[in-house]
Image (cartoon, rainbow, N blue to C red; front, side):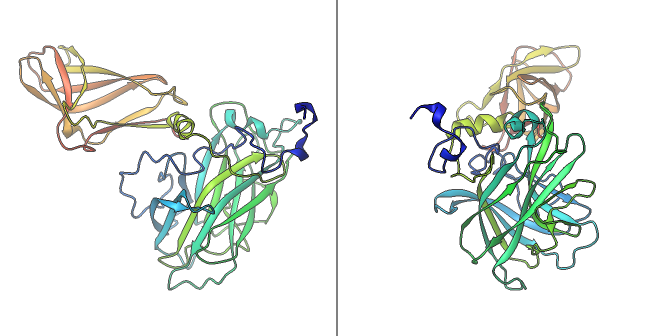
Length: 372
C-alpha cells in the first residue's frame, strides 16, 4: 500500500510509529542516580530515575522509599518505578499536594501542536500497579489521577481519573487529553509542559476538563488518596504521551537512544578506574595554587549545566615531584559541551600534575545538571 493511502485510522497499535512518544525514559531504563539514598523521598524536586521527579506543594508530609525494580509492567519484564509509602497522610492539609512529574521542553512537544498553534490533543497511557498497606481504608476498584500542565502563555491544566480495578495486578490505563484553544507550547528549550501522576492533593481539579493553572491540582474530587497508609505501593512504567486520539502500543526504543536523551539533562561522571584511578591531567596556575582539568560532555546538554562533586576529600592531585596535594575546593566552569574543573590546592611550588581518585569505587563522581 502506498504511504499516501495510510491515514490516521490505519495507524493502529500494531503499526510502529518511531518517535511518537513525547515522554523520555518512560520505561524507567536509565537511572543514573541509582546509588543515592532513596528513603524519605517526597520533597519538591526530589529526583527519581532520569527525567522524573517529585513535584509537591506546601509541606506535603507524605514520604516514600523509591526504587527502580525489574520484572514489572503488563508484560512482566519491564523496569518500573516503585513508590513505597513510609509516611502516610490521612488528613490532607490545605494546600498540600504530591505527584510524580515529567517536565517536557517545548522543542520536544511540537508534535502536540494543532493547526491553530495551540495544544492539539494527545493520549497519555501507562502501566500501573497498586497494593494497599495493612492500615489502608481503600477498596478496589480505586481511582488514580494523571494529567498535564502547560506552562507557556496562560498556564493550563487537564486531569482525569483512571480506574485500577484489581489489587497487585498490572494493567494498562490511558486518558485522551483533547485539544485546547488556550494551551500554549513555545518552541524553545525551556519547560513548556509537565505530566503529572498524583498521589494526593487538597485542591481538586474538575475531572476531564481543561482549566487555568492558577492553583496547582494533581487529583480530582473522585481520586483516592494513594498515601492513606504506610506500606501502600504504587508502581508505574511504560509511560507514553503521543499526539492524536488513539492509545497505541508503548514504543520500546533502543536504550542507547533513551540514554542520549537523558544525558541532555543530567550526567553523572563516575570515577571508577580500578587500575590507575587517574581521571584528569590538569594544567597548573601557580598564581592561584590551582589546577585546571577539562572534561567533555557525552552529548550537548539542554543548557549550560551546573556542576557538583560528591566528596572533595576523595580527590588528590599528584604534583610532579612535589608530592600529593589535597584538594580544598572544586569549582566548575561549564558550557553545553564541556567544562573546566578548577582544583584548588595548598600553596607551594607547582609542577606537572595529574588528578586521581582516593578511595573506593563510587566514592567520587561529578554531577552535571541542566534539569528543568
